Length: 483
Image (cartoon, rainbow, N blue to C red; front, side, top):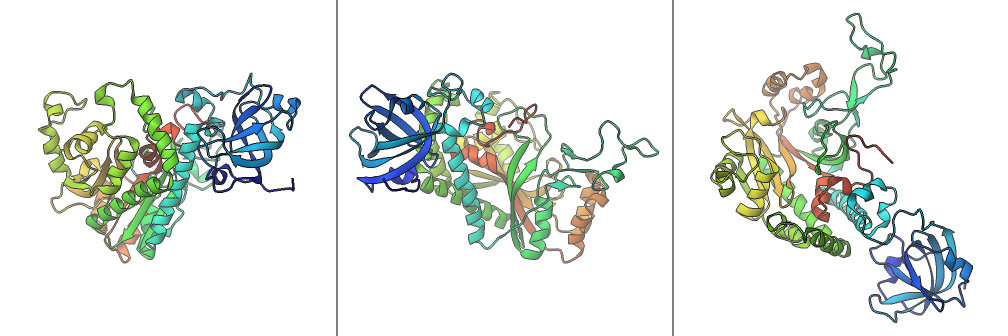
């Protein structure tokens, strides 16, 4: 056959072409058969499904077939024909197979059987070759594209904010330090403190926890901006919801108030849910079935009331319920689980920091729709949030989703210089660290608002996975910086 380019398996499986000569390349999922014929399931990552390669020993020699096992990489060419068996429209009858890379069956860890997610994390360099992680990575890509498409269509400008920063946007203090100083021979000042003037940047610097403050600067010139970049938290959190390195999407919009901010966030999340449903159906159906299988042995109260597809449709098709933190506290205080002591954290008074169990109760049991909570107590929120007229709450909003709790956090930002300076002082943030941020309140200040969406939290929701370490290719968490 004449030299031909590789064709992706995804396009062949549509079944629009038959009786044509093609070449495919990919990784072997399984090989079965007998002396008269071998069947090879080949996957190239372009889609969930495999292409069946039919290898007749009259065309493919025994020494080639011997080298083909699960995990091996091959190039196969031959005729694409209508399939004889059930399960696929077409199959490839091979006229030639070249083994590009062997995989020793004795040592290749990803064999065709069920592996635990914990084991898969140990082989993160190979796990994208499995059905589950191939599907997650394709969905993740689709969501990255959808994020940029949404903001681009609305005329936003994408701003790259610094990864190395001299400020702590959250006031959290749990940051990774960036330094070139010799750790065995640290320079010190006369007071015995570390002399950061001798460091690379001439001051103490860290990896960013958020691009928000710099995005605000962009909004005060360009009107509508968004960031989409890596962020870092040095919290010693070994939970299913925390990573030390993750990606954040942070839009900031000049002249928006809290109401506008809620409208933008709701539109955004509905767009993403609909995009996933419209563009990732095969992978989502697989992930839905996978999650239902995982939930089989769980007690009834731990099972999701809706399957994965239903949850995405639930977000895409329902208007979000909006209520204040104060109204939410009243609902939670008087709820059955609170009165009967079923909440791990009992709600006793106004000012309590809501936990995931409270957020999920509001979404899944009480309102049965996504919820936006607004006007939180000032003392449990960040310094940059706008103080309300009551003097005790801020113009903040959190969006709560089924199965996940908080997915978006945002606020109208404090644009009044004097009020912001007071809040900076009250939080113990040195003014010289944020002088540039305060400057924007002195020179042409304006009302503005924004929010943050943790990208991996979104992918957890869209894929139905339950551990955040399984929705990022190479998770970073305490004690783990492998790969």
